[in-house]
Length: 199
Image (cartoon, rainbow, N blue to C red; front, side):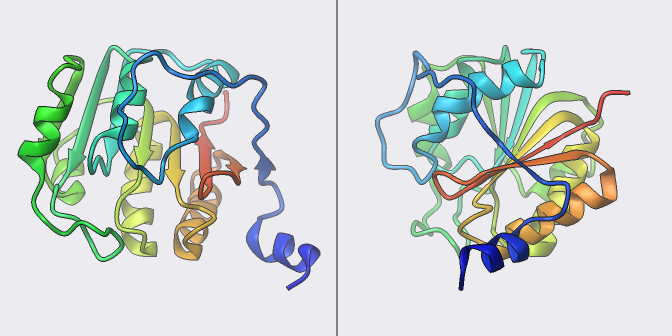
């Protein structure tokens, strides 16, 4: 597949490549293996570029807590929602809520919730400054969770837009449905960034 064909098939007309203005490493980080590694360098830049407040962040798909700790550097409150049982796309299929809770105990502004995203979004009407979606990498789940996140946050980020075509397709469709502006950062398995347009 040539580069032009790849670009045409993988981007919608108004998608913008995300270009960080600066990279910065958070002060607090976990020293564990994570597919998210590298993305911590652009979170402060995303907050700055889109003028996000730093009150509340929600994350769907915590796994071992790498990204949750990254977010804890910037937001007063981070809520992490996960079944902590793995899924078809994760290597670890063992229940690990207690293990992750112990690992994240020093980060007192993180609240972990053992829940399926479907149960959580059915009852939560709060507003967040940033939402992170990194759940099972299928179209329907990404779209459903992502739509709720886009409707309840100023900015929603989606991991694995480059690794999983179904995630990329869901994010593109979410941009069309919501009218939000869509950016893509292709590094570290890809990060889709959906931002509510300023009124």
